[in-house]
Image 1 (cartoon, rainbow, N blue to C red):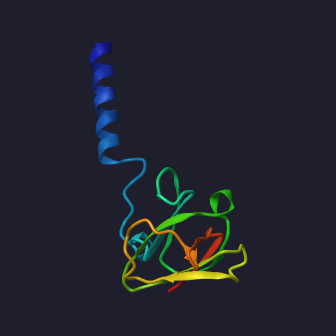
Image 2: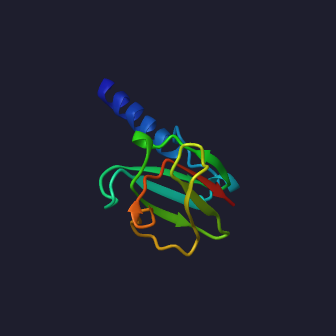
Length: 127
């Protein structure tokens, strides 16, 4: 009798967990839609190893908290409606390296100025 009661209790508990999960799936809202931009920053020019991912759906002003102070390579994903990512060689978003437009390829890119590799130390996003 005790074994049957225990099995019944465990079966009921399992059914309750399956029909009422503790963490229900979120209902679709505008905040659950995928971001309009993503920037993967890497510590090397091959865009290999650990990346630092930044993403969002709105503009972002001067972000300079980059792993180890800067990045040597990056990969971007910019979706429509478009945003533009501006890269800078200083922590205050004053020395521009260049802008990443929506049509930029989704491949490893290395910033350079006059043929010399430059470290990305900050960036801004304008949507």
